[in-house]
Length: 95
View 1 (cartoon, rainbow, N blue to C red):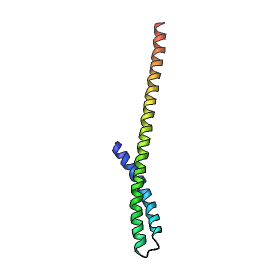
View 2: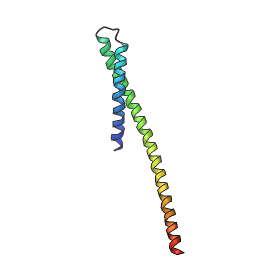
View 3: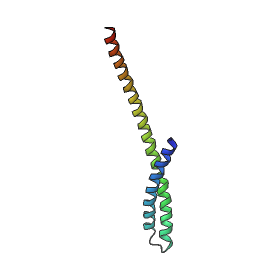
View 4: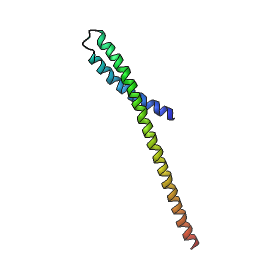
């Protein structure tokens, strides 16, 4: 499941950045007739996809770290609540 999440996030960012890179590359080499926009679009798209997928992986890794921290905090809070409830109920039963 973790691998699917990382791959999906990387792919979404990669496709978005790849499209932007293709547009930028095509515009940058538009001054070269016929092959300029084609080569520029291809190279820009590849570079954009690679950069976007790395950013997507990094973002996924960051959210995974945050998720683990939230999970730990919630478990600690739940255990504290259970202990307080047990102590309250036991003190009423024994008194």
